[in-house]
Amino acid sequence: MNFKYYLFTLFLTTIALAGCRPDRPSDQNEAETAPQTTVVLPPPEEDYEASEFKWGYINRAGDLVIPAQFDDVRPFSERFAVVRLGGKWGFIGANGKLAIPATYKGAWSFSEGLARVQSFENKTGFVNYSGNVAIPLDWEDAEDFKSGRAKVRQEERYGYLDRSGKLCIPATFDYASSFENGTAKVQSKGKYGLIDTTGRYLIPPEYDAVWAFSEGLARVRKNGKSGFVNAAGKMVIPPQFDSAQDFKEGVAPAQQGELWGLIDKKGKFVVEPAYVQLWYAGEGRWCVENNEKYGCIDATGLLVVPMNFDQLYSFSEGVAPYMFQRLWGLVDKNGNIITKPIFGLAWPFRDGIARAAVYGGIAFINKRGEVVIPPKYMDVRDFDEGLAPVQEYQ
Image (cartoon, rainbow, N blue to C red; front, side, top):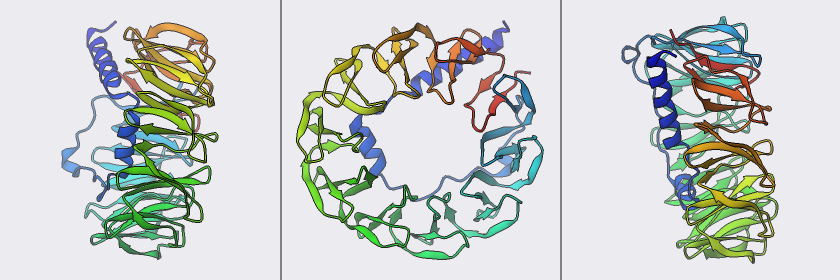
């Protein structure tokens, strides 16, 4: 194997291992409440360099169906992918040809039929599938459309556009999030609340932090404690926990002192606080950690995946990557080991396959841990709409 390729692969895997850790529950809460006042802008055109190693796309058979000819790319979304040629961004279709010319300083994936683009004057707007400007590039900051609304900044305040480009929710908020399932977090006079797509408050701005609804309840934080309110804005679980996470399958992680347990929708512990970390991992499982060992419990507190692992990710399609003695393997939701720890790293499954670091680079594996697309590219990313970005080694 080429020695330069080996060094690159080793570097890539080391970076991935350092950056792919499940957050502690308290860290998740802090990250969600931190206001994000500006959108990170792409660098000027002259700051880009033509990449020595070009990007293309493979299909699920591993065939390179869009030649590696782009300096950078993004996953496909709504039949289009964002690509960079030199210092300019545009969009290609599934045939690999430019469908929207690379003329923008920045471009983002399509969402709800519109894609965000940025001019070299640092103004943002939206284009449609034909590449026509649907919403003029007049905005200082904008985010993607969600629930038919796009967050925009007007001077130092935030509001929301509808799909016609009308400012349907005036820019009156000190902070605002994108919509999630029809609601958005907003800040007014230092306090947070939740609004619907008309701008009406579902939860008034009287909390130190607020999160989107999950299973009919929304987390709130007040005076350093976490509780839950219902869709009518009524407090149903008073703020009494040191921290909490969203309800999933009828229970929610809650922290009392240094330890985490699970509460029901009355605020009663059904699993007493006993874990240093606890988070919902999908498939009716909650990852837990004590003494730097990880496993999983069910909603009753029964340990269904033994706490034998040095690290454990959430489940995707019934499978979770685990780490043991610096290598990664796969385990199912009942604790059955699918593969021994043989991978440098393993990523979540999507449509039956997942990326994994093997000798020679990044491959795709199936749920038995078998390599289905061998490592022959410098870098690979996940599949979306049947295509995965790959970077060729020249």
